[in-house]
Image (cartoon, rainbow, N blue to C red):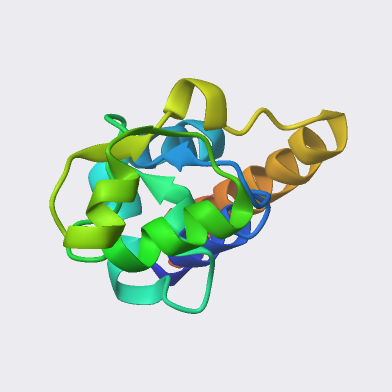
Length: 138
């Protein structure tokens, strides 16, 4: 995976505020590049230093294998949840998920400006890399 894409995904994830969430596909759509699997791959390999719990499956499920840690973050941040999250905390049993309809991040104008800048930089960097350096290309 190109480092330019990795950097763009990580920059966008840093913008997601506490108490909000986005689906992997939302990130790809906002960047205008890649898809949910690519974003998921970036997050699993490079996202540990970021608020990774804010990027989830479209179903609202937390990143697999990290549900307990993610749930603590969601509760601390006041992220809207659905299901038996309190039972899950007590016993490790119970089904729950982020209420993505209520929690989905809706960027304001400044947020969209920042996202656009990230996406435009990604496009420029990817285009520059794809142009042949043969002295004949325009």
